[in-house]
Image (cartoon, rainbow, N blue to C red):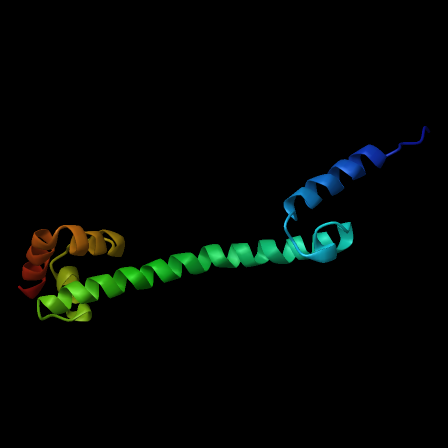
Length: 115
């Protein structure tokens, strides 16, 4: 059986990983072992961050909707339950957009929720 030399493939793999760690501090950018550890950790933080971003935006939407409801003398929870009873299905992102850019349409939704 002939011998397989893997130097080129290994070098390419190392280069690919080290390219992604550009800008890291000290050995974390140029020593393969340290760079791999750091990159795995960074990728884990990035994954968690993408999930947290969704949570943060949902919180922002609720705050905006609540502020718009308070202008009309209604609380957020009463507004949402009123919409649910009226069988209006609009997601929180669209409600917050309406509250900011279309106050008249949002006022109509509040009137619908009050019934």
